[in-house]
Image (tube, rainbow over all chains, first blue to last red):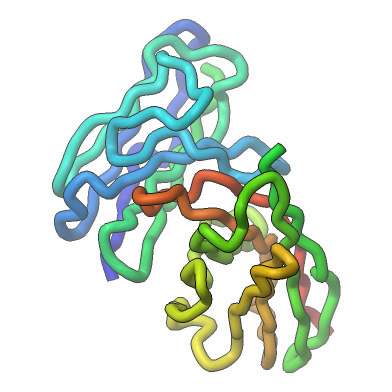
Length: 107
Length: 119
């Protein structure tokens, strides 16, 4: 099973600042990596798939990069609605696995 | 509107059974692969089970293999999860999630249904 490790566990950022979230896979997952956003009491929402392709309706301030084992989600200028937990997921191998999440909180 | 709506959650005793349902609308259900994903209180996401569009291919997480059964009825636009021999560690919100075509990521999620296993 591929282990996905996200860092940091918590990221404190001021509105308008840039946030950089990391996700590392225990073995290569090519570009088969997705990012999700989850707010309290809500289901996850797909942000990025294929490591760098934004899902439908996702603002351009969200961008993804990386391949192989190292991936990054960048939020260029944090808005109030972006404070949430973010998960990465690899779907290169079964079982598909999720990272433990990064909580982006208001500084 | 593309939508997934789960139902069937509730309180069940250890060793008991429960059947979850996921009703799909707004898209051609029979064309899409589907999954169940769960989230224990205050914890992260855990994939549970996968079923192909026709139902011919099925996968389970080791944690539920032999106890849970995924199925679908394309005529009724519905996905199911039969959960037997439930344990306290199965307590979670259970989400059904659609696989984006040709991609593998989960693009549509239901709102979730809570399953609590406790005596």
